[in-house]
Image: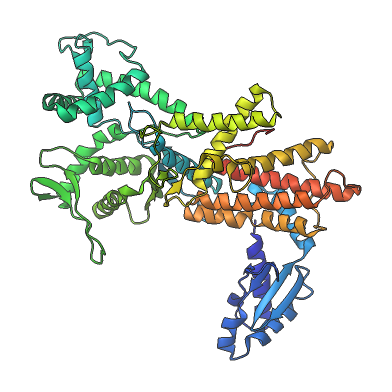
Amino acid sequence: MEKLIDKLSSAVSAAFSAAGYAPGCGKVTVSNRPDLCEFQCNGAMPAAKSAHKAPILIANEVVAQLKGSGLFSSCEAVAPGFINLRLSEAALAEHLEQMRLSDRLGVTGEHKARTVVLDYGGPNVAKPLHIGHLRSAIIGESIKRIYRYFGDTVIGDIHLGDWGLQMGLIIAELRERQPDLPYFDDAFTGEYPEEAPFTISELEEIYPTASAKSKTDEAFAKKAHEATYYLQNHKRGYYALWQHIMRVSVADLKRNYENLNVSFDIWKGESDAEAYIPPMLEKLEVQGILQESEGAKVIPVAEEGDKKEIPPCILVKSDGATLYATTDLATIVQRMEDYHPDKILYLTDKRQSLHFEQVFRAARKSGIVPAETELQHIGFGTMNGKDGKPFKTRSGGVMRLETLIADITSYVEQKILENQTLSPEEAAQTAKIIAVAALKYGDLSNLATKDYIFDLERFSAFEGNTGPYLLYTIVRIKSILNRYGAPWENLPLRAADNESAKQLQLALADMPEQLAMAYRDSAPNAVCAYAYALAGAVNKFYHETHILTEADEEKQRAYIALIALAKRALEECIDLLGFSAPDRM
């Protein structure tokens, strides 16, 4: 379906052409002076240069062509050559009716559908999720939904940290604590137990204990490195322990991500790249791309014109060990073979920007990724406390993600109970929904690359630019529709009969354009900005219009049709952001 702004540009371009000027001058934009007009065209100025004519004369000629078209209720040429436009109420209603009858409210893909591998999440197994994992999960989930909304096939990969030294540390610590386990008996040939010799709580204590010990105990650190080596060479008992660690950890990770309404299509990790590393390195050697530098093997990736130093991408250290870059490059090999993606997008902390620049250049230089496949890294900022420093617990530690969610849920539940509108049971369930909205919107409404301040009170407020405000607006519409008392699902849109109704219709008509910007820029914050503006238009219309008490039934049906469409638009927006609305608040 053609977007409203494109429809208007086509009409004005045709008017320029009919007046004898280049149709390219007819681009229409939303007015930056809404007090004067709704849309504007500034094309008379560039047209005047080639026509050697005053812009105001050209603008008047174009306006003359537009009058009588039925698309605009008013067209005016204003010095020095602006064309101010107001859209006809009938034309606007007709456009909205087409949106209502279309899939996804007229939002259509503007480009050929792509296959995208989206790498987000990235937690290390055997460690609890903390607030440092929040942004990748929230932003990645929203981008995945936005891409799919525009027709892309998206493979969301959590890319677990599951094959490094932390595994060796856990195994070494387990061996000291429970040396009699069959996993450490080289002579054992039977079947290992199905149950893990630890719980998730024990596992989460084992890792930090082992990590701290390795920093002061050289002998233990050596044992951990040896255990890592044996694991990566698939020593039978160690590999069986690793499988236990994976099962216990992944089950806990899934539970925590589900609480955030975040899901992944595949649960691959660094371990899945291991098989691709030897043949990849061999191929790079044959190509002559892999060079030796001080005993290490590297790919030089600096390019002429670099404004800063880009160090070589190190794939094999002088002691023969591989690094994150090796695993990441091998993972790209695997993804190209398995999915043939048009794009691979990574969501991580912005401090990893140089790492991905090196890996991407190595992938291009080696031919692992063809020129037509896009590689992108979105580096996000940190979530800070009110002091401007990275968010911490009151004791100064890193807060667990489930603790943060529980704190927000408890805070929201208390506010709901104070209003005394819901039973304790319903308040508890509703609080969970609102808490996720508060947390996600509080994050996503910011530009991903920027740091932001986490403010529990502001994020949870039912007024202002917050997730709960959007939910409250949707719940308000649901209440009106329920009280209407007649079928409302298929009521057609009608021409607006007051200014707030028209402004709400214009806001709805802007949805395809705003979501297209979010898709183009991989920017959930654009969805937030649009949803907030739409909610504002809904509430202004509600306060200025007597909907349920309107005596004229035709007018009332038109009002109900309008807010029903607004509800649908808002619900689609919050779904793209990764949360939903309750029935009551």
